[in-house]
Image 1 (tube, rainbow, N blue to C red):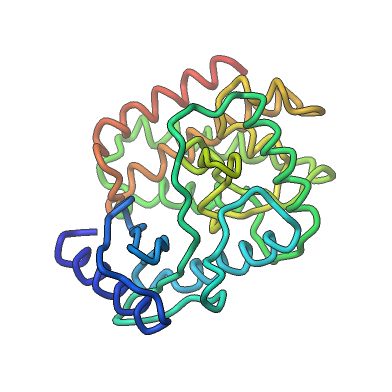
Image 2: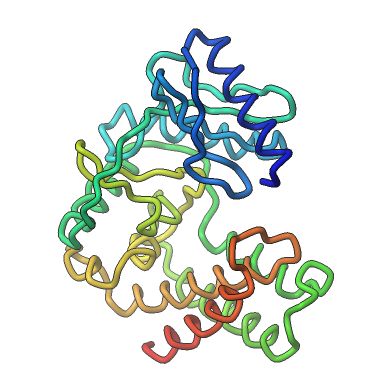
Length: 277
């Protein structure tokens, strides 16, 4: 968020929490992108604040978190002191979560794989209406094909991303017999190392597909410790994930920090992943 919008988001989080009976004397920015994560003190709440246009996404995330809490999934939980729902204030959607102090140690591949196994088992026990991961690929493909939405993408790179997204989406999504509910984007930035153990965050990306689609977001060693994973499918999903990542970076309205670097890096990662298939 730009500085002016960020100030409004901070004040909205402060006011919302206070209206719900939580004491807020200080607000610290934990993460700032298209939505922000704020640590509210001394109540020690993590407020996720997004423009109200993201209300449906925020509400979906809260519903997934609420259901996963009932089946003891390794996920960050909503703050138990307030009702599990999204608050809409001043053109923002606000959800309040438990704050977990992160540990400095890196999560070992065996622990990462164990968190995956427990998370996938919990996801099989809940029922939510989530899109298939190939639907996400279709959205990315539409953005690549639309020159107004990706005006700086060269013709050669546009053709390369189009072919890669279309082919890998068809290949990885053809067999749906092993599909289940997934996290959707469980990369290392979305797995916190806490005193409670590894906990997944950012549940709004929940979708359906094979577990290999999730595994392809983690470090390569993790899939080796996940019983029953198909290594060839993991490699194909990893290439698809980098193609999706690259497609998002070339959108005109993308706000990822250091976007120019990641535009070039993303295309290089796609090509490297394809070489391994």
